[in-house]
Amino acid sequence: MRIEDFVDCLQSEFYTGVPDSLLKPLCNYLMDVYGIDAKHHVIAANEGNCTAMAAGYHLATGKIPVVYMQNSGQGNAVNPIASLLHEKVYAIPCIFVVGWRGEPGVHDEPQHCFQGEITLKLLEDMDIAYMVISKETTRDELVGQMNEYRHLLSKGKCVAFVVRKGALSFDKKMEYSNSYSLLREEVMEMIVEEAKDDPIISTTGKASRELYEIRDRRNQSHQYDFLTVGSMGHSSSIALEVAVQKPETKVWCVDGDGAALMHMGAMAVIGSEKPSNLIHICINNQAHETVGGLPTVAADIDFSEIAKACGYLKTYCVSDKESLLKALKRAKREQCLTFIEVRCGIGAREDLGRPKTTARENKELFMEYMRSLS
Image (cartoon, rainbow, N blue to C red; front, side, top):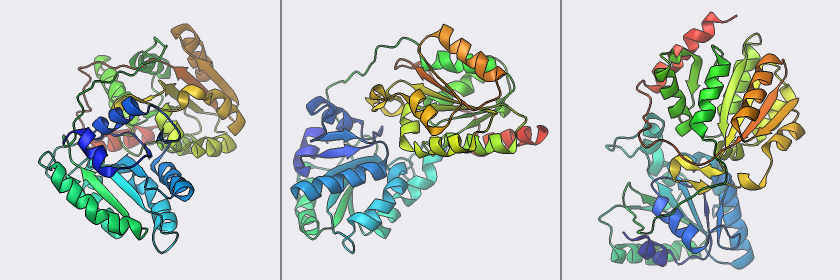
């Protein structure tokens, strides 16, 4: 289905969400039409955040908002859906557009498999009527469904469209970039070089994929790395407790700007604990690159200053190899909680692969290495 037809049927003037690869046509269309405009289109920090903004929009205007997300974000949205939007509470209507990663019978990455199995059940449990959109769905079918949905929306209920892979299309190609030349894979190479045999906990997306391939190129074991292939925004919390439980071992956490924004409260908890052996690195390319490159708000904030305010004892903000190398060496040498923000460009190799081992194999190998440490 052409994205223009899809959006025309929704008839909404406000969209907010977290980008998803299956919803890339919608995301690109919204960027092309609105860009980032608080009155019409906002890319949120997480799915609960955008659900609450949708509520605010309805309260202020009486109109129906649209919230878009990958199905992995349903968990973040459950609380405001159940305790804010639901008709037993405030009865705030909303249209959800959900990318169906891990759909049963469709090959996908391991972090999406179980989420894909429960996607429709979660909507049912939250009392949200849904329609599955596929390549075969026609405009007339969508119009008919929206006519039925308008009755539900008028009663303060929520509805959803669950989008299968390839169901939506947008002809215009969108390019996203920033002014930085240092690339994430170069940063990952430098981190691996300085970390040596220290454990690394890496965030979901291309950072973990690049880390895996760097180990292969160097003929190094993957035992040092925990690849957080799902659970966006939680790698730093994993790293915190690894560092606390292994106080004699330097622990490195590689985050992304989108992930750090998604659950920024984790930084406050880390700063309060102050593990002296934790190095938290945020690779900030100001984009949700793994799912299409759409912008985050990270161009307008200073992560290193936020980390300092949260209690990190040493903080750095760098954007070139020389400054990064100095920061990495200091962090390795010094015994204090350290945060390094690395501002870099958008881009990855077209032939970037994926881990050849399963998530469980990664866990077991990493835990075996943990048992070998003091």
